[in-house]
Length: 393
Image 1 (cartoon, helix red, strand yellow):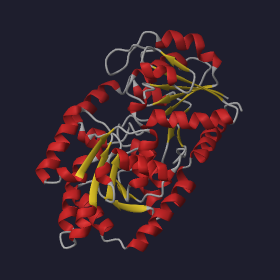
Image 2 (image 1 turned 135 degrees about the vertical axis):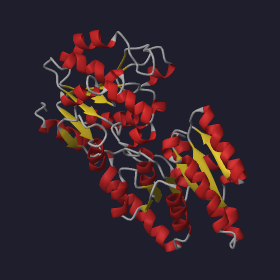
Image 3 (image 1 turned 180 degrees about the horizontal axis):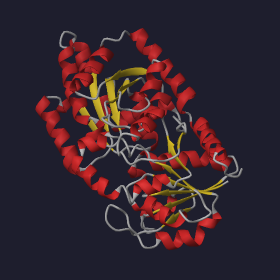
């Protein structure tokens, strides 16, 4: 099968979708399929030359919407080379531009919304939602309506998508999502992390790793960690061991606000800010941690959650992370609401968990990853879905 993935940006700093494409495509290639990527990036970007797949960069693009006049002509000239085009993400020109060309062509397309229809956004960003409503009837509604199928990575995502806009019609399919999981020498990766951040050595580490953004509940994590320190006042030795690692990058303004909050809470000396970490250093963070923490307000899948599970790391997550049901089913972590009370409760529950229960939860985390989120299963589920839609082998 000849597959073309269309995405707004192929820059790994964009987060989960492009990483998912890269991992999925390696398995699709190994199975004999052809995979290429179409993006709106400037081809002169320095990271473009190291991209691991054939890539067609249509930029430079204009505004955050990503309009570029090169996209439609290129796709009109080349769409016949592919059996299917997979749109990754909506609300930007990579979706509407593909629709403009393929709606009247013999080349079908499918859409991964990647959580971008979650109703959380309309409640938290009402003004942005109003602008989307003005665009929806003639833009993304038609993109989804005319797709061969709209692909959701969890049943929870599919259910939530129906609640964002009343004008909604598409053919829905749930495709199990997954990642490659942990690789490399665990001991060496852990040692690398401690060498880079020596203040974390011999500590009980609570880890956040991802994009520092308000939707991730980072402020709630800082509050709950401050409460954890108060919770352990009667156990000074353990209190001294507790350490919070905030891994990942974000806007300068938001990161500065978080650091100011940590200072106000009196925990600044107990928090390590790593910036963006990749490769062995990223895996070292997971290997060094005792638990992974994400009380996100909206998380379509949560690649970092799956990565943590692949390291046997218990996950403390909100019920707004769309894979929480699988985590709960396998007893691979703890689940609470995405508010201050939920964040404090989940931290307290973790601190009170006996050592033997933590060990059991680590074993369950690995089992949960293998059964639910391994990329082998995702790759098979993806191709199976496309064949069910009548696409060639």
